[in-house]
Amino acid sequence: MKIIAIVAAMPRAGIDFFQSLLDGHPEISQFPGNFYFDEFWPKLRDEKKSDNVARLFINNYEHFFDSKINLVERHHMLGKDKKDFFSVNKELFVKYFIDLMKNKNFNKKNLLCYLTLAYSKASGEDLSKKKIIILHLHHIYRFEVISELDYEIVCTIRDPLASYTSIINNWPKLKNKRMDSWSHYFQLNRIFCGIKEILNYQKKTYVIQLEKLHIENIKVMKDFCSKFDILYNHTMAQSTYHGKQWWGDAWSNKDFNGVNPNFKNNIDKDLFFKKDIECFETYLKFFLLKYNYPLRSNGLKYSLLKYLPFKGELKILKNAIAFFNFKEILYVLIHWVKRIKLMNKKNQNYLNFPNSIG
Image (tube, rainbow, N blue to C red; front, side, top):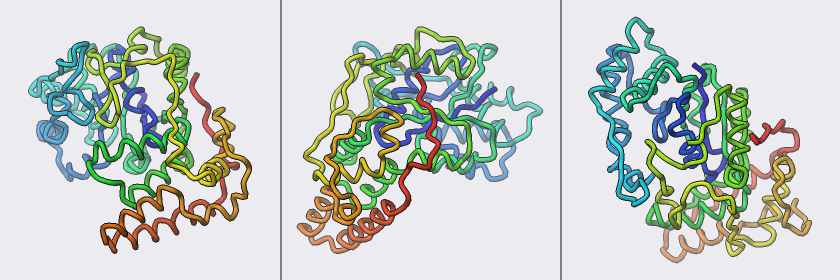
């Protein structure tokens, strides 16, 4: 059974959308969302009873068994009328996991695979057809706990300026607060270093571009199937969870209705100074060229401009000053220096970028 770990190499790059296209494929076994195995594994400690492991999983991932409580991914409003949801029988899941783990060693691979397969079986799927386990880790740093396992990686990307626009503009909506300096730096680091950090794990890696996933959907999904030796299925053109139409997560400004052949990135130029765009594109030049993203800057002098604050950094600083938040003022300065140090590192011309599926 092949394990494919999927992550977003940068913010708002469509990883949940990509996973929704895998839903319902008879040869794929997956949970309907993120499984943070790096958090789950330490909770087991020395637990060796399959029943206890299964019930601990249920307690940590209740929303996999009753989607009405998953408001962030909006699994409480599935289907054409947005009134549908899914449920999976917990006792069947426990029973199937116990059966699958019988006479098996309690190690990371077995737990990961058999938890996933037990969920698929409890969902009414035929395990005899399964070839692939999908592990949706979402964040790159979560690879650390499974680094010794044999798996391949599929990561999603998009135009970096669109990635930044989406995370900045949608942050207040979901978090109900302004973005702080730590979060801003964390998201910038994901954009600048996501691919590099993934390649550090030295696993076979593929890229899926959000733009192509929409505009050339069938071509991308057929290439994905070819690479992983499974058959293309018509469900891969439909965005669903448990076979029910998905409308996007709570971060989105609007409902999206699956694959959009007319997809266009939204880039809010009010979020950038001109020199910010130059800094983005100079540091990411080889990434942009590899994946055929446009260069929009005017060739300004990058070496000095990177030392000046980004527009987003200044906005966070102004808010901190306005509310006399002296702790946040200090953090803004610390993360500004960290961002400069990041951009002083060698840019990405030396990386062997993974090929884009499709």
